[in-house]
Image 1 (spheres, each protein chain N blue to C red):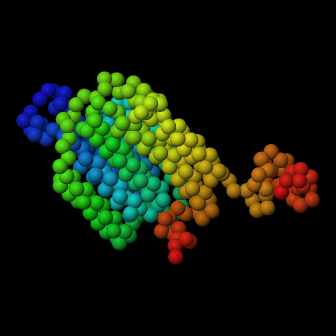
Image 2: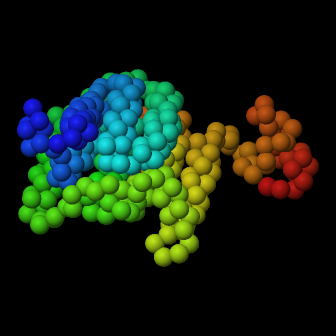
Image 3: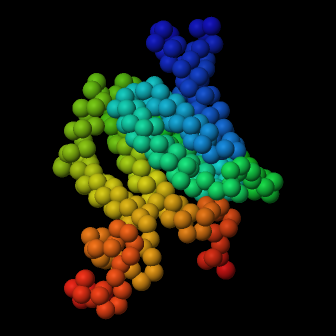
Length: 207
Length: 110
């Protein structure tokens, strides 16, 4: 056993245990802001596990998108939706029993499925020498086994998510204000849009 | 020490068990949380363990290719889109009903 293998074995157990403990903290922490920070820890540990599996590019993406983007978004949402009745999120005993039973049953079931299958993994061989190069080539490959169509679809999905997020979360205009006025009419900034007679004159006949 | 490390060296089974444990913890959070943002965090945990599973199978089934890592990248992208829309919905909901308690969102429950 080379020193490298010994190191990766130790790292697997350390990172895995840290990930499990932090994940338990995420679901059990009573304060959501702390849970978000623990979630950041879990995702960072996962990035380390990806490196152990030889996926360096994926680890970088994980840190950039998950730890740097998604967790920050979650922290913002926690701060924007603070309500007095949910400052301390304590589940009832019934929900805890339901959740615990279901998750333990799932764990046992998946373990049974794994042990009863005759899955024969190959010994973990070395992947492509340049991980990032291989991913980049395959992501934009138009031939068989290429991923250029899912790549385009996922960019459309992200665009749709951005537009949907803006439309859903924007401030709802007051009653009777035209939704499609474009936002550049006089009086719209102060929330006093002209009504009825003058309305038509200003908007040029649009409802 | 070296002998011990050799006997507990992680194989595919160890990785899959770790991923299943993380998924189960996420499932527990999904079912026990009351705050919608807490539920979303649990969903993130589950998505993350799913992506880890893809990478594990890539490493142990087809080590010469990067298809599993590609799927993990798509999972991360979909998770980002999901969080954006989810957060927008929660903020709009909070503005209208001033709570994000999932046990009280029961208008469409018959």
